[in-house]
Length: 379
Ligand SMILES: Nc1nc2c(ncn2[C@@H]2O[C@H](COP(=O)(O)OP(=O)(O)OP(=O)(O)O)[C@@H](O)[C@H]2O)c(=O)[nH]1
Image 1 (cartoon, helix red, strand yellow):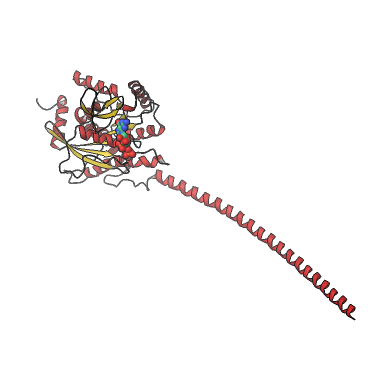
Image 2 (cartoon, rainbow, N blue to C red):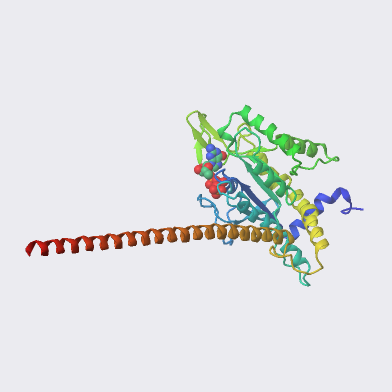
């Protein structure tokens, strides 16, 4: 039999993806100022075709990203075209309540699964809008220290929902040894905390592919340098990179960072795997979880109806009532104190009044006495 069978699965997937005009969606997440937008621009500048009729821009503005932004482009690779969507998310880490700054990102991912599931339940489902995130690049600050609790928390949440790909941002700010140590530390934390990250599958049938997958796994988390600037190296090559007094940090140089490997993983070697694992694992997990908690076609539990939020709301209400009671008691005490003070002052006033009165009487008596004395003298 030709054309059917497990061995042809990758080719078949390739065909299905091609015929359906595949969508591939990448999301960038991480603390503010780590170079998420720059990485998107670098990917666009080094590989991705300029958008055709798409509404969106080629190069993103470098201002601080304050809301989730969706950038679209076409990616042409040999005989197939991919509609690429990149989702830039606001950096978090500079808010008082950091939880609020990243929950919209999680909600966005869930909402895309939800929207796709709802469309699948419709009678007409040929033209589905699909923004399910196939790869989520998570930026880690290049400190060389262990991951922050906030990173761990977010990565845990992301790892159960999407193919999570951690990267070390701004690799040009570290020496090769520091990068190596940083990778070891991150790998240890990921393992110890049970964070689910994407790992390229090892193909047992194809040794070259397996070797490639192992090589990819061994460099993860990828170290990244982002830049859209053309700079000249000391040996006269013009490259995308960042210029320093000591030389040039090159984006596409494997000795300097893993940008090329990341790009290859995303838009060459493992794109189909990222798409199919999203469909088969993450979307399926979402669908199953939702099917277990509600009837077919029933809308998603709104946040406010969600028992967890109800409980939070109830707690908040109780805290508010307690606070009001405390304030009221404080006010009553203060009122009592004021009344006592007023009474005391009134008494003082009365006392002063009586003293004045008696002094006045005394004065009048003295005056009368003097007048009497004067009239006797005149006589
Ligand atoms: N040294 C170095 N600087 C970088 C790199 N990538 C970006 N930057 C610089 O870091 C600053 C912030 O970059 P952005 O791309 O705006 O960062 P962001 O993560 O999108 O920031 P938010 O939108 O606030 O979340 C800019 O000045 C960039 O030029 C890098 O690889 N190395």
